[in-house]
Image (cartoon, rainbow, N blue to C red):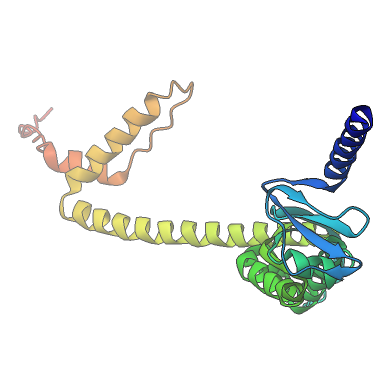
Length: 266
């Protein structure tokens, strides 16, 4: 009798251990558990830690609450100014309502991916090329709003959307390069012209000062000669202005000739 009781107790303990092993589930810290009992959703969402379900009756589905980084495949489209481009993006999202993410949509990851691709093509068609290249922050906000509107009903919140790269045709790249080169050349010519204007004004002032003092022109000429001679050139061309001759002529007194004597008669 005692042996039968011991055997029955051991059988119950074994059955209890088997039942506990079948019913025990572990939900990780970044997960939440959604329980279906006979196909019906239970209102309570299981938190992290050890949780128990009824084997064969309950079905536990774990949903990750981490932020998901999903790359959006490159989408080709025509911008509003008729330029063909290819745009890549990345979407950051997370599940905020596990029950809604499991019940309302079959695969929320696939749904978000398709919505992101569709929204990206729509953004390309509504934007101009300059906006895609320079005003990405505004486009990112518009793209995030377009994806987040339907995703809220799926229990998903879009955290951030970023446009990674904008690929242009080679012909468009060459055209933009020529345009940038022409713009840089135009600015260089304007800067050179402005420098010439300023230099001409300074030269005019210097010429006015030298006109009042003729010796200053000669000193400037000698300074130029010294600067040219310092270059160790084999040939030195020295201009000799007429003004210098006049200056020397004024500086040297005129030599008077001796008077002639009376003529001798032969």
